[in-house]
Length: 235
Ligand code: UDP
Image (cartoon, rainbow, N blue to C red):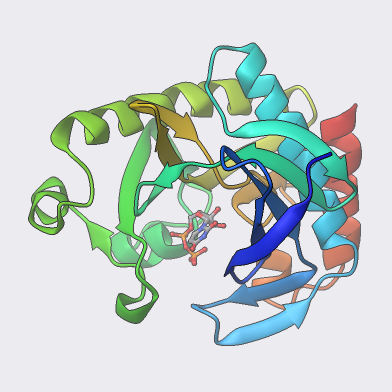
């Protein structure tokens, strides 16, 4: 029987525990929500369970389509067993439409369709506020080798195509999302989560926001939106 031992890390939305097996860790999804670099804090009732279930479904789908992920099994409603990865300290953002920080950076209207996906790499560093990096910055920081950066971007494009199709079939537009990767036995593996906390998802018909922007912008109906995404993802 696999059991959690010590708490390795507590983030804004998840706790990670070591286990009796050094090759795996247990991820516990919390209801806590934060935005704007932790300045806004709150709770989204049921979010832990929703995000654990959605991550399980999406990682399983990606694995079935040839993407290596850290997912191993769902332990219970809020906890997943995942491979213990050496994390790359980068957040990989993929964008199909303009929203959020890209809207501010480029001054383009929210919702503008991008002909080709835009990929951005951010440095995972709370003290610096997770800055956007170019390839030279990554080299200076030695955050990842040029080969890993190339591979990260290719994986992100492949995952984007798969997820866009998956959500499209369920009446959702994948506006943008964030991925994190790790290394396991010299191979790049998708880690972290994929959920309405880390994706912008809009209803295809109404363009209604069905993700964490409802919390960020106090739009109301946050719990209902997360439950609706869960329902569609499971269908
Ligand atoms: N994102 C995330 N974690 C972060 C930053 C961004 O999951 O620390 C996701 C976010 O939910 C959105 C995408 O990455 O789906 C792009 O986010 P953006 O750069 O627009 O930042 P935001 O304005 O949302 O903070």
